[in-house]
Image 1 (cartoon, rainbow over the protein chains, first blue to last red):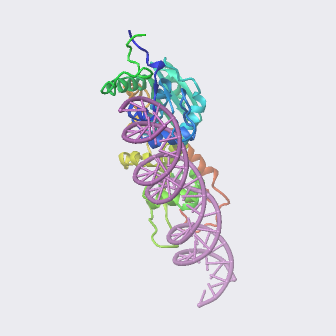
Image 2 (image 1 turned 60 degrees about the horizontal axis):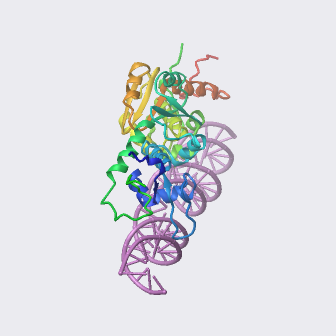
Image 3 (image 1 turned 60 degrees about the vertical axis):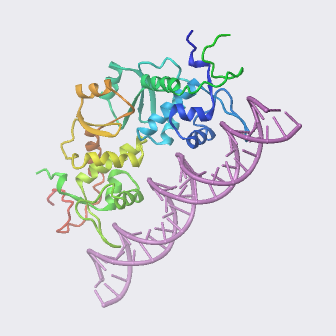
Length: 160
Length: 160
DNA sequence: CTTAGTACTTACAACGACGTAATTTCTGCA
DNA sequence: TGCAGAAATTACGTCGTTGTAAGTACTAAG
């Protein structure tokens, strides 16, 4: 029985480990609404934020863009265009950022087409790798299995 | 007689107009050695910096990268690899930034090749357009022709 | 030589994007 | 119910990248 990652939820701490960012970054991005915890917003000190699998993908895209030297300010623009576009069927799709426009493009002809007319700077990020990165990170970080608590969201597929 | 732009020199002020950046940016980039005025460094208050045509190309590349949302920090890395690579025969060459490596690639097959193996973020900047932008800006900004002073570097070749 | 411009330099401020550390509150468990 | 630990919040500081404004030196004209 393969449990899809889609229904999982993750704490802030866990997210930082999976995605590979600092807690401060996650907190800052959350509080400035670059991303938001889809499962639970968590308001008030001591509350708990819960992020979805889709949030993880989004965050990893952000991380890769940051590592690629893209300004956070620019990333905010990008995600205004990307609203909800980023579902789980991201395999073999490239994120192409041209000027102030952002599109999802299937690798191949379309991409070359865009390159021909290339004005300004073109940023390209393959999303297939993003999904792989997250998925393998989730598996690798599955640590010492906690004593099974009934409402643990990290259900590994033990039935019921 | 076509006067090549190559031998010209430009003041800081002029550079900002041609390239399309603020004086503060030019100054900051100069003083932090992102670029340096090839013709004359200009040391001490009141001295004069003189930039070359090649400097203009370099600065325009920087501007385009900035407009593309690339962090200045990243741009510094890029130019460490690009040292002197940026000559005047930049037509039909693309600047490709992949991770921490930067290369000049002729449009076409090589580019697609790189895209296939695409890891992380790929930044692409066509240099042909950069040269065009600078050249046309130089022409357009040729203002009220100064009374011909013998050492004016801005020889228009009109001949009275 | 003096004066007026222009251009370069310096000083100060501001903002974004975090890091560090202390504080608060929630949760699981005894 | 009370306690320990984990995670979120708040406070404060810093660094890089500029903007604004004031100071300073060079250059040409008289």
